[in-house]
Amino acid sequence: MGSETATFEAEWQKFMQRHPDTRFVDTFMMGVSGQVFGKRESAKDLERIFRSGVTFSACAALLDVHGHGHNAAGLGSTDGDPDAVGFPVPGSLVAVPWASAPTAQCVLAMQDSTSGEPLWFDPRKILGDVVAALHRDGLYPVVACELEFYLVDSERTANGGIRPARIKRTAAPPHSPQNLGLDMVEDYAEFITAIEQAAALQNIPATTAVAEYGLGQFEINLHHHNDPVHAADHALLLKRLIRGIARSQGHDATFMAKPYTDQPGNGLHVHVSLCDKDGKNLFGASDGEPLLHHAIAGMQATMAESLAFFAPNFSAFRRFKAHNFVPMNAHWGHNNRSVALRVPLGEGNSKRIEHRAASADASPHLVLAAILAGLHHGIHHRLTPSAPVDLRRADEIKPPPAIRKMSNHFLAALEDLEGARILSSRIPSRFLKAYCETKFGEYRELFSEPGSREYDYYL
Image (cartoon, rainbow, N blue to C red; front, side, top):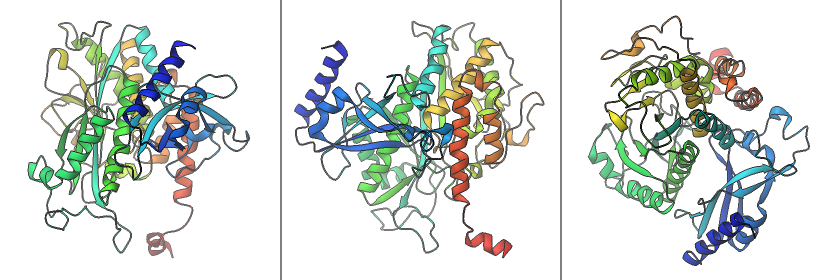
């Protein structure tokens, strides 16, 4: 028995000793749409899951938000829809405290069933390859994700819309936003506490909970992690956790980029720093400022090309509105939340860049892959960024001519991504094309039938 097999066996046996009543195991991979797809297995099959893996459709990674395939890269229809096999990622077997029956979950690393190679279109592999390229150059990224979301009523309004979840104390939704208000956190304390407890049980390094600008809007932060793949895993697993806790309490949670037209959108903010092999922050070193500037310039150079990763659907482009602390261009600055690339206060080991362009419904793995690919490009070519925008609103300042303008529509952003010149040097072109095919298929289905508003305009 190999050491890896022995480790796997010890993991599931130890888990069942701690959780003997477990009935089911949710086994899943992480898709390009920032969701998980897989199977619910019997806990009696844990030995088989760890020894032989779980098989399901290989193209699951390329499904859209509804779980529909669009034959992207010829996968799913024209190839006969073959299975891939997934093996549990070490350490990912954890309990699911919000499930109605005793349930566990584990993340699967998917492999081609014939060659045994990792699937080339698995978002975890895409990010892992970008990180490996940085490591080969002696650069070790450390990242942290911040996720914004709304807690909403599980019952839709008469016209199919959504509204904030009712507060238990008043049996009514909140009437006014309380940005950074601790009273709002306390009003939803049962929900926030359940998130904290579940995150601890699942080894998800969640930290601060903050009431945001919107009605029933919150932000949960994750600790910095020196493995970006695991950091992205944590972000996606936290989204699953938050949705599960919300449902268990009779609500829903949405990470939709702009669920209300008159409220702020939901962002996925990413903090990134660079270390050497010994863990020393290179941005915060005495000679680290040029490296910081090169990284910022690379992110600026790839911002427009990466936008379809950061804003992954038609709806996400509603988030890009002035006066909402959402970047309208690729400006950067110190201690300025109106820019796309913010350098927060801090020196030494806390020196970092906050990337603020992505929406919360994006794939964390692809967002991090694009950010780190841009960072690497800027450092490799020693690029120079534009002048910083400090103590001013960046959405009122035109982007520098040398920086490509961000598209203002999803279809244009997909074209920018598929034709990316810089990003394709670090993320395979065939993956960029496959992602765009999936997302265009999703867009086409969304508008396949006329809606009531369309009739109002064109009937």
